[in-house]
Length: 622
Image (tube, rainbow, N blue to C red; front, top):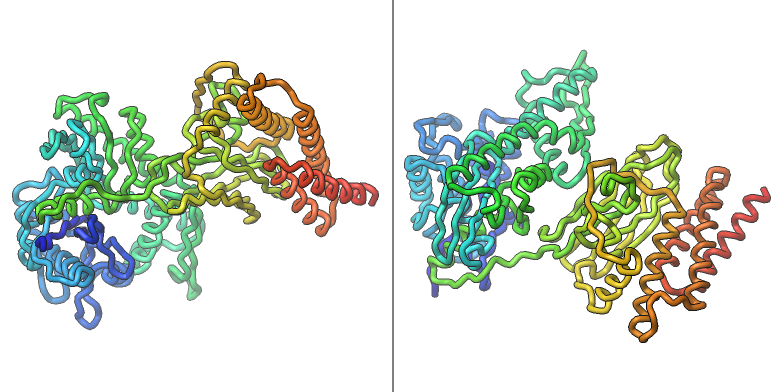
């Protein structure tokens, strides 16, 4: 039986432990949690707290809690816990010992050896302090592994021949970027540059200052002299920051954060991703200087880099990928959980040292990008067929993402949401996978915010929800098998549709512009006709007839669709004059008609149209 050796990512903010289990490397979980906060504290009764319990205590008792000790490794710095003082390796050993105990509970055997990761720029003193921490925790540290090398191992870069990898590691308390050369079992860090005092903690502080200052300006209370209130607010800000990686906005609510004149004062604010990214942009742009420095030190140009790997929880912020792609022209890889990536790599090396042959780390990802079409600028011209994915291909599953779109015109009543699969900025060059309508928006000026949320699970089921932010009005669609590859026939049909539409290949580009919603029903009708025409031509081609030759059934279907669109427009104009019951019935019929338009059954569409026409007759007679 192979010897048990674990891989440990001893991080500034969080730590993880991985091992070879059931034929593959896994990051071990306790009570469903793979990530353990790198926080140590003492409870009121003197009991030692490590991990989540210590982090939770920090909000109330920061004086009895220690975090980010990794920043002090290799120094003579001392920290006080209770009535005792400790060195950084001793505090780190408490974290390592807890990870060791958890691993033993999961594996059912004693753990004595470990591979532990450190930043590439760590000095000899810092590396020795890490070894000391392992020894104090009862672990023989068989290898100290550079974090960028661990990331390369996690992604299996050593299986792809000679490659130059840029590893961008932005964690809670440290940042570094490394150029790594990988060829077979040889992994060499060519250059590394960074800042061991920059990370997500600094982003938290910027957001904390922003929220606190706005709270004071809006009539709140300055709580900077209240450690417990500030700790509560910091925790709320940390959670908000995480949500803003996936949502366009979030609310921060803290009940009774302070008192004024004997009365409780509550904090309730909305923070948008744009506000947050504007706060951290200068710091992120500073990291690009480190990227340039590392490239220069390694004698490389951006075009010499084969891939970019993202490591560290702070890289979830979409602005990170956008800035890196803008600088290098490469889309960073994000298949692996950024908080777990280094632990995976440490686990891979640990398993190999134990004698296991690890081919690759298994992870479920989305092979395709998904998003809705919207009105914006395409090649400098307004177009209702702009496209930008919400879920990006190679994203780990399950995944949930939300983006905000704006209504185009005053008093816009609804949005027909067309969902596409693909990466082309021109929506019609992608694959239409679903369509639904949401009706009954508030009568407000243009710019009404509509949230489009996409949830994609491990089974490839895509759920799309459109919600009016101000009222919560929403509709959704569930698309089965969204990640299933197209059949050859479907590909051929799509190609013929594009040829019929444009007569030649079309290259589309995008320019920055507002993400607006299309309200032109005539344009919607044209979209539907184009899709049906492509389907008919594909069927004719398979039958040996000339593509584009009209058939009677096709003409009838087009007439029916045109009539349905006109009926929908007539009904939408009357919505405001309807009573509540009639309006609810009309909106339900709108949805039935829209759904029927996505099926080849003319009877189903005819039935819904007849019911809506009857309703409108009575409404107009009132």
